[in-house]
Length: 587
Image (cartoon, rainbow, N blue to C red; front, side):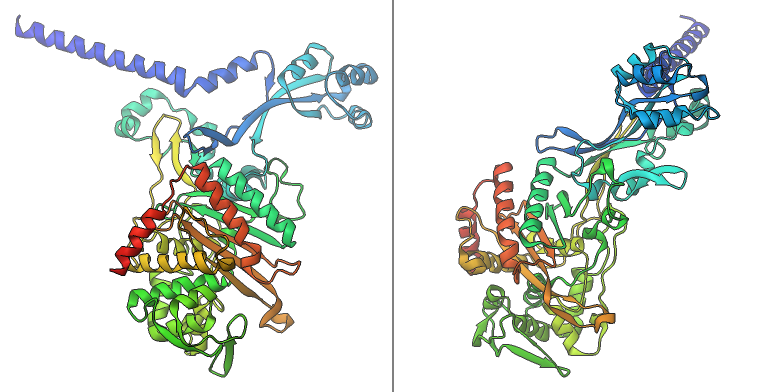
């Protein structure tokens, strides 16, 4: 074949391929990218649509099976309005419309009487069947418009995680929770939805073909498991009812990855009726926005620091006199009693001894103790969780020149952190001594079909593996022998756990210091202890009805939740593994 003929053939083939590619893209553009647009046009043929009808990306929970369940979506319905001046017979119009949709007669007549106003809304969110029936009445002055709105199928489920869509001035936008944090991803802006294909193709070829994620809208897939979330919320409601607390909250997380299976606060609110609350404070998420003095769940962190630094072992002893005086101030054990000479560090954990935690801090020294708390466990820092409003802790006592401030910090008083910060720090005990980044979004699914896994900060080692193993063994002993006398241990599973009870700070205007009869109760635990799948953090703020210690208010909710998770996820028993680990550690 002559050279010129081959050249012409190649040129024609190139043109054919280019045209084929253009038509393939055009088909994709029409059938997938712009399918919703054409659906909108089709619907306009029989019912009017309000300008810029509401559109927004969806948020999905992911069940353990991998099935997605809508947590936030967009519902469509119809709005019915009247032009009062065009209504020929107001009474007849009311009677006809009221046979199809529920109307308040007095309200309808009041609006129908505004003959100088050409537009009055009389019904909202009307189902399609009823809306079309109203349209078929053919009454002059009666109009039907298609509308859409944000809808939360679970009602109050994970309300503080999801947040809601509400008005901010004259703009409808994400408020609180994920609706706010990922607003740019969820927002659908018609101005940016569609771009002329050829202009886009030839002016920004690489972005068009290879990476649209920077400008595309998407849906969120969460780490929240709806059945686990529902169970946690039920347990928190039970705590509130039994102890008449001001507030209760909880987190269930994978301590190795930071993926949060459940995050809940009580009191909560219905996302579909978020305006029916006493005040906006209930919308805030105290698990990431409130700082608290956490009490004795700090002791395992203090003990881990001492073990890691080599200044104590589980068998190290001290003379527990029941109280310690530093810088003119005295603190005591919860019961005021001393355990005497030969009190071991395991006993400190079992009996939750304030003097023992202070002993470990003294062995570490103030500077090294503060370094472990702030630079390794990162207490007081933001965790980087993908929720808005996260606060830093109050850690100024760890810059004090007085020993008393460090001693009280060792058992969880005088420093304050968020629940998510505390839960994340405690996760390092469970996962072998590594940092994790807590998160509630697993991936973003873009409209183009591209899926982006939400990346986390790479983990860092902050404790030796043997330190994590040893503190875990100590906490398993707490559950097996000390927590409610060992009565709540689960024979088939190793569980590491610790309670905390912290006095609530009294406001300065009331004299400062601490209340004698108001407490924050906390509880954390992870399991199976030596290869944990879950860490649970629970708290209840100002419980009443005779509640003094967290062991009374939160132990059973924790145990029930642990049993639920073990059964729900079919986690195999690990006590044989526990025995092997114990032998290894003894060697």
